[in-house]
Amino acid sequence: MSAASRVRIVGFDPRWREDFATLNIEWLQRWFVVEPHDHEVLGNPEHHLLADGGHILFAVDAAGHALGTVALKHAGAGVYELTKMAVTPAARGQGLGRLLIDAALALYQTLDGRELYLESSSKLATAIAMYERSGFRHHPAPRAGSHYARADVHMIWEPPAR
Image (cartoon, rainbow, N blue to C red):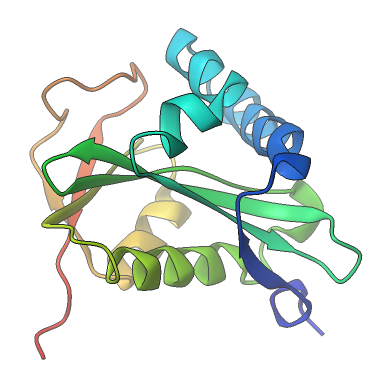
């Protein structure tokens, strides 16, 4: 049985604040470096993500352990950024990333959003392929005002036609 079949997706709770930071820092240190903006956001997600209408989701197992996370940062005027997505090393490759993306997209569709974008790195081919399968399309990068030196991929979600 995959990890994805044994988890539930839940919204932010302060008990997972440290997990939010730990999951993202592990991932960032594996592929890049933890940039100053990362430290700010991960150190105080209530201020940097939640206070302005953003959301943080967690994939948690039956025991309540956070196995993965993703955030929707409200950038203003109905624009949201899909950000801070990470899965614990032990659960990677088991469908949690897809589960988190699907939950974030479902949540975004309940908001009064006009654009959902993400920034990534061309080093992350597997993640980029997952984003493409989820309906994100490439746009010129880097996005004006990007906080991340590592970002050389800019994608915008284009929902399927109804």
